[in-house]
Image 1: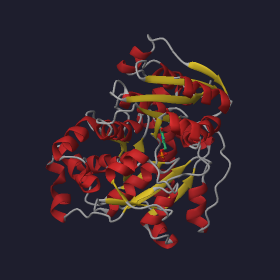
Image 2: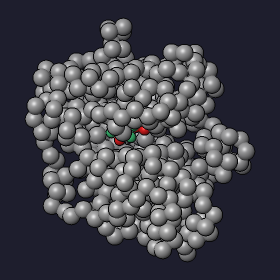
Image 3: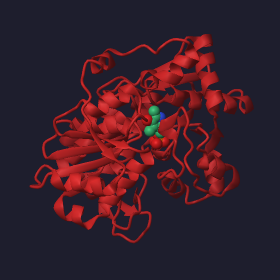
Image 4: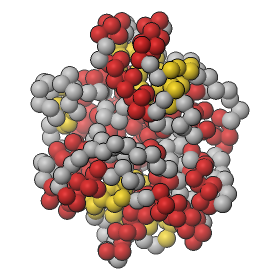
Length: 431
Ligand SMILES: *Cc1c(COP(=O)(O)O)cnc(C)c1O
């Protein structure tokens, strides 16, 4: 499989190069030259497959011959080595729990797959690769965990001081070894700007081999298809599901649409957003306009200019009507998110996190217009990662998984830093 840049100014590359580069030299996102199609037999028989074998079949056409088969099988097996239960909340809404991985959020899947690919691809390189990543919370933990103790790779994570939850901060700051956490006196956007400046800085590029781990990397994006297939293994209705995806940068939804285009049965997708709703606006109006970011309680989705949106356009050849036929957008306020967490807990005893609650509220609104539609939400994080709003909504603290309890016995280790690129640059060059 070859990947072209959506800016069309760089040459197409294979999966290995697309993964190593992250972004094309012309700053475009990579996109596969063709969309593979699974056979009807494969779709009919996938229920009987192991999740490892299924994950292998999903990824193999996208990886092409960039990885030997035994290596790809090992990588996908490690990627999906935790449960992905589809739990019924009530007869027409289920929850696909994507948070049973090491850092309790769905980003573990993409991060595990990508880190293992990068480790394999950079095995014979003499220079250490430094992964720079800015995080608003979940990405940093997943990336740190994915790269912990991987030979030849150093990870530097920038996070906004005081703006991530306690569990998120401990996941970032307690790894040690080849993982360094920098606590920036500023916002997520400030962290992101410092990382971008480093990537564009000739002094830095000359001194060290940088790579990025953000969600535009094809290895992260495409491996997220796997759990849509694992969900379908557990879907027992004759009619395909409506799938509600809590969305920020739209990597997750973009993976779901790709799975659909390769042949996975899906009735409809819901782009569930908080008030950062540039995409729902586009779906209604046909006009895309990025917006300044507004802080919400579902803060992993506080994105004003979602980077994967251009990929969604490409999948539909920029055809607004075609996108609307498959995807509906909803804007959910914090107030509705809180009410949803509360009522789902009271009625069904099920605890949603704020991101899952946005998806739940959106799916309920869709069902008001489509009363026979049944489907599921993607529950993208364990409620324990967002204890403040969850506790407020359900009147009790979310239960702490065993692995998270372990975190609280560890000591935070971060490098405090001013929001000043010159300071960050000096730090990088002195490492
Ligand atoms: C990152 C994240 C999202 C948004 O996913 P995108 O792929 O950026 O749309 C949703 N929920 C949680 C918990 C996240 O960490």
